[in-house]
Length: 217
View 1 (cartoon, rainbow, N blue to C red):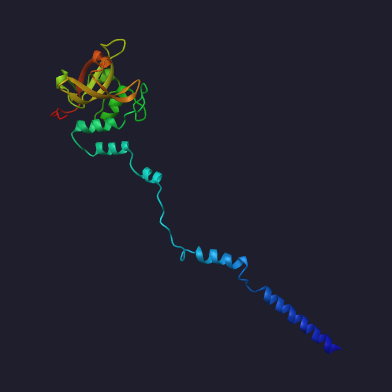
View 2: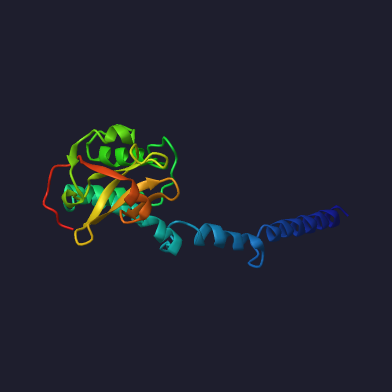
């Protein structure tokens, strides 16, 4: 009887060990080896090839210098005469809004604009246009104008009193006129012609801040 019981217990023990050994094996269809393949092999730094990053058109555009930045860099690199550099720098602010008393660089009034531009090149002008009319040297007539000169205009209510200032950007000798850049109340920083009736009627005179130079328009 004891032999039968012993034999029976031995059979049960063998069956249990076999079950444990079977449950401990790795089943190829289970999720565990799949997880091992995804994490342990494919995503390891040694086996994962790094793909080159694609730069989108927006990112590429953002990496390119803006037109304003390029113009400012050119103005600072000493291209052309001093007056050419001043004009190039002034033009980088075209479209900047007008605000009375503002001296830049995001907002300007007329004398704040001329002061800011000239200060960039080492010339310190006062803020008020009437005071700027006393600085530098007098330019007697249109025929004597050169690029970079300051040109002054009268106020709306009193054309004999200085109320506006700009910077000459070109001279038309045939027409006896000039083009100038300035901070206007209506359009911000713009370029205008002296032949426009408003400016023709209010022109008072010009002052030269820069050294004299041969005119090359």
